[in-house]
Length: 302
Ligand code: HEM
Ligand SMILES: CC(C)=CCC/C(C)=C/CC/C(C)=C/COP(=O)(O)OP(=O)(O)O
Image 1 (cartoon, rainbow, N blue to C red):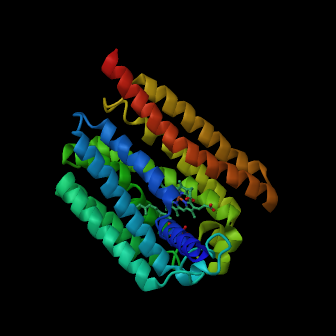
Image 2 (image 1 turned 90 degrees about the horizontal axis):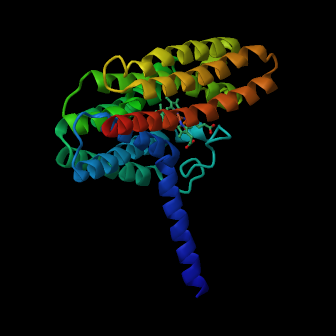
């Protein structure tokens, strides 16, 4: 009986480690964006395409995250935030995580290719390869890695759009742009409150290389740019005034909060402010997606 319980609990721990390898918080948020991209498409998609794009995209993002954890297992040991991950603690071997990530990559290609279309599978493959083979090694070379990492990071809404339309055109590109720009203040804030961690691991972030003030000014510039980029869907005729009003209000709150950072002069208050900007970034994205869905639903019925 006790032996069975021990085996069960070790199985649960194993499953928990595999789940941790996928970075489930990021997978969840990517899926919200993929669903937003699908919703925006001019023609409604069959429910099987919805299921395929959501499962296929989740597998692609999870695979990218798991490969990233294998590649960074040494650096992750040096950071407070990441040192308890399955690889740095030695709870899982690198080969095991590689097999898991490889199977997820294969599953994503099969599910996206056969369940949606091969353009969507190709775009996901581009994101997977650029995230693991370009962004991940560049993190230790230049702070510009952030802009490069933002390219695969911005792909999830595009997967929804291409799954529904089998084309790469302007509304899909705007969704890509929104997520691309959003990632800058999202990460610049994290890089401020995790500055010491990144310095310890030799990761060249903007606050480590150029200081907090430069990071704050950059975050403000990106939050400002996020407003016109997010509003562009209305002049393009995709969304209406309801979305435009909500997106403007949310964009101004986000911008206002980033500007507030300029008034803090000590590292402790910087950290408090940066955590608030990070949390706000996590509220902003699903809220913007909800605004989009609300606007399109309103347009369909009234
Ligand atoms: C260059 C791009 C990005 C970088 C460098 C980045 C980095 C990070 C880091 C380091 C954290 C952990 C923060 C902490 O707790 O200290 C985090 C959290 C988070 N990120 Fe990002 N991120 C990026 C893009 C994205 C994208 C594209 C999404 C999804 C659309 C996303 C969604 C999230 C979510 C939901 C969390 C909180 C939940 C969790 O930690 O699992 N991020 N990000
Ligand atoms: C469709 C597809 C495959 C899309 C890719 C989506 C994806 C993996 C988005 C995350 C973007 C990103 C740069 C995260 C931070 O990684 P990090 O290495 O800085 O995070 P860490 O320090 O927590 O490991």
